[in-house]
Length: 114
Length: 116
Image 1 (cartoon, rainbow over the protein chains, first blue to last red):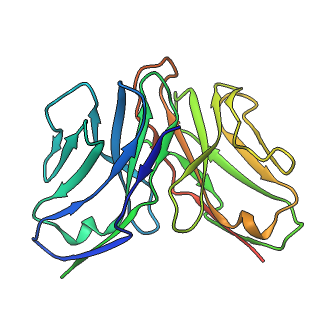
Image 2: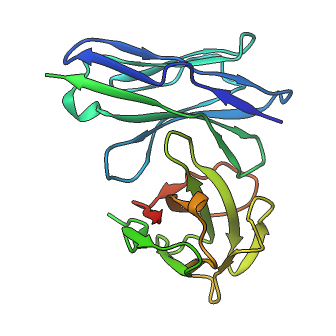
């Protein structure tokens, strides 16, 4: 069975700083997807970034980038130039290739301080 | 921009009562998911529909939970009777196809259930 572990329940950083959220996962699969989802307070969850396991290049989306270490089964999210609107719960998630079932971690609550 | 709609946004009920949640997916999305998110946890899949058919309900507590998507569009999740441990956020999501290819799941705002 697949598991996703987020070891940081809560983090706070000052606006404009860079912050890194950690995630590790466990799977015996070779082909899979990894995701970071953002869930702002009282708003719907949205996909921030995704990574295909077969791709060596780390995914980037504007201020968001990942550090994907397949051998170490690590998938961290870096937010550069953090903004107040980045305040949210962030979930790391896993999906086996060919499946639709997403396995979520427990989340990291991120506070961006003015 | 198309969004997944859910209602109600908040529901307070007493244990042993029946509750129902409604979800309207993005138009044209054939796949619909119901998740339960307990406070401090990530979402867990309860049931997945492809059109009107259940694809996966292995994590649905079938003694008290039921879900339907009669016309393959909107869906209802019911709990009867509700228990204290059912207090959670219930999320609905939809995606375009179910074919083994990656299709992004779009989430609704959720229904927060409190059972007293």
